[in-house]
Length: 306
Ligand SMILES: Nc1ncnc2c1ncn2[C@@H]1O[C@H](COP(=O)(O)OP(=O)(O)OP(=O)(O)O)[C@@H](O)[C@H]1O
Image (tube, rainbow, N blue to C red):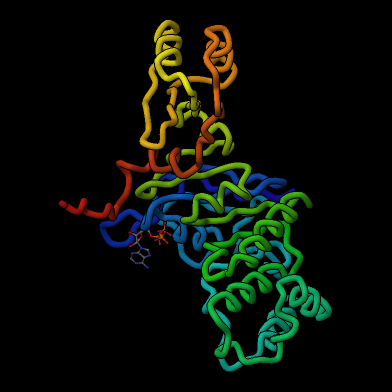
């Protein structure tokens, strides 16, 4: 099986460092989410992996080989970097056929990937008449054409409608389930949380995290419990006795920080406090990500003074 290996990779544009001494490996059989604020270096890294740009130093390889040395690379690596890449005056079908022929991919794959990406009914239309979402689908079709072991997609959900977003999620899960190596950049945290097993996070060209998604969230977001009662005084007193800090909200529910549902349930039960609601507050990838990248954002929006 084939990994993507990034080793001490650095890319400078003039005096600015887009990628700085980056080392990580993207493993097969799982979806790796590639995250980072605008300008963090995600696209640059992907371009370096694809040999579209030359590193200032370090290496980026696929199964130990530079992309440029792969025979018929489309059969090894499928990538979506820029959905506008297809020639507008060609039909989707012709675009894919030309790619198939130049990479010695069986032409029957064209119909298969058109079907897979939901483009069959519009395959004979010129690409310039396509919506952004249709172009994204065409870019993904091109990436899948060679049945590659490695799939690398830059913002694949861009422009997709809700049905398309559900489709891409299932597609990514399936590709990883088949043992392929899948690297996907995104700015959509809920989306990434729905398909990624593992995360690589960049900030200002540097590696900030390379960890399983669950660990990434658990390490950064404190467990909290949401609770509602008819007897606030008794609940507060019981929590106080056990050293728990509770915060009240306008709608009448309370949040207990650094707490687990089992403990709060037991405390309430022992104290005879009637509960209307008791639930773990789900820690989100977005919370964990913002916590990590708060100080790393290149373009942080200015706070609006009221
Ligand atoms: N061809 C180029 N010439 C000069 N600077 C570049 C070039 N390509 C990228 N950069 C710079 O490199 C840095 C990293 O950009 P890159 O596009 O890789 O980030 P990104 O993480 O993909 O961002 P986004 O999330 O906005 O797509 C940015 O500061 C960008 O301005």
